[in-house]
Image 1 (cartoon, rainbow, N blue to C red):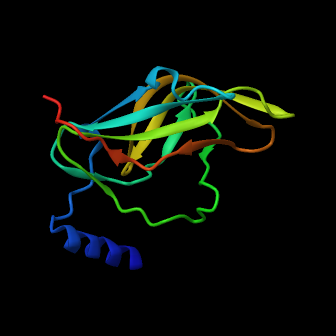
Image 2: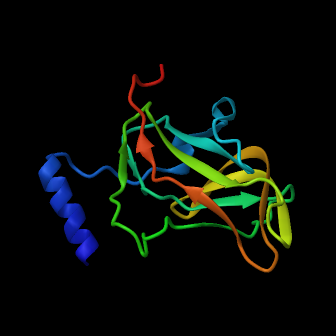
Length: 166
């Protein structure tokens, strides 16, 4: 119940009504490697962009991300919480205006740097939106230590400044 109280308080402060949850049909997901900006020191990554093609709606600040193989199976990769952020701050949903986009940065270990390595090949990334998912193809190799989950970092979604797509 405290989360609901915070959401109501935040809505009262902004003076804008809460937006309905985004539907998968109104969202387009894409990836941008940002010309290699995520690559180096045995790491790789991408910026995941979610564009709203419909009316204003709300997305969770940290949507559930899954990496999948070429057969659509979920890979054993899990989001690692930042150090000192357990369970982490309360993050209110992000209001995404129609035609606008929100982004999150994803980073992972991309080379066999562990004493005992385990690598998985991702063919797609999915984003959970309500009870459904939206998918975007990728070619990524994620590494972790044998016997443990493979970790990746995910920043909270943030709305990008700029004009709506025409």
